[in-house]
Length: 207
Image 1 (cartoon, rainbow, N blue to C red):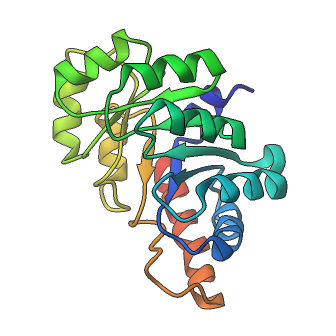
Image 2: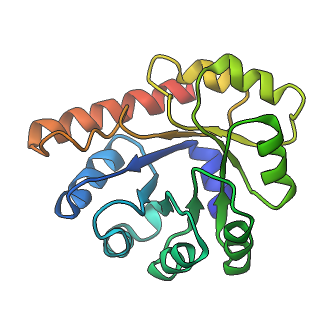
């Protein structure tokens, strides 16, 4: 199954930003136990390329690992060389979209207005990250005139509103601190709660 197909099937991309590199594998195992199958490591985290490689070594094909906060071509190339299967950005950069396509990975640029979202899609975005995801009603307003564009709200999706975002037309969800709070100490209790939270998100999406 292709990376794009798996993103569309599993829907939830868990975003790990700013975690201690030594903790990421433990966090990933806790998320996996809760049903998460797609991870994004942001490029503005510590040692992101090393972390991506380690995750791929540990999980192989069991999880899809991608890079987030990719702002330029050089970062995209490095992320893909490390093994990233998809590239996520908070912005639309046409050169990043092009290099992702050339390298054969899924590209998900970030946009907000209807014009930005359409521009990203017209220029080759596989999915467009709606960022910030201010509300399900806003996503519904965008999806109305642009039903052909797959939308992935990020930055505002919570356990309380994820079903509303799905009903508004989202094909997937980028979830950061609402799922993985990297400011908390990574203890066995934290990891247990993380698994339970992941299960709750997965269940909410699949109901």
